[in-house]
Length: 209
Image 1: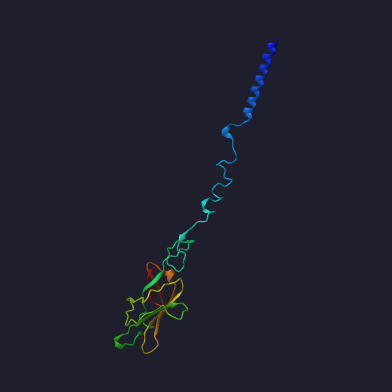
Image 2 (image 1 turned 180 degrees about the vertical axis):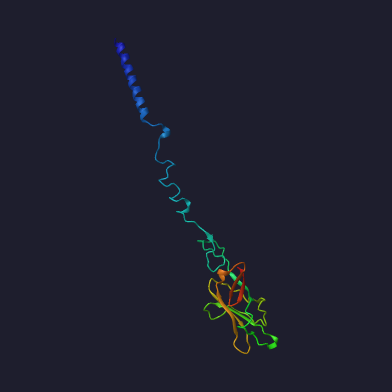
């Protein structure tokens, strides 16, 4: 009888140990599910995008020439990329001009010439000095181009310029044939600037540097 009670007591102790072990196993999570709070998947609500990706909230960089004095100026650019070049004069031309002075010949037939003796002048609007004053071209056909080489390369700016075309008269004041204003940078295209006024056309050639 005593041995029987001893066996029952031992079995009871073993059962209790089994139940306790099972309880501990259920309370401890598997090792692979333990999270210490330093997980690499955590982005603190924003990750690497800073709320707007790598474009800093949508601000786009547009590279180009940002100097308005350049014919290559890009109004859409917000970052200068060093691409600016500038228009330097290489030549001047009166492509055509008025054939007569309000119905009269420009000259009075001295030396059998009745055509205008052209002089061209150009300056910045309001300036007292000219950036170009061409030598006289005598007896010029009004339908043929008259050309002057630029004595020096002048950098043209995004400003208003005035041009004046005269008939030279040795015995009295020169007669104004035509005059006008222009902005060379807004007109610059493929190496030339063309403007017309008063029945005459001015063409300026330039090189980009």
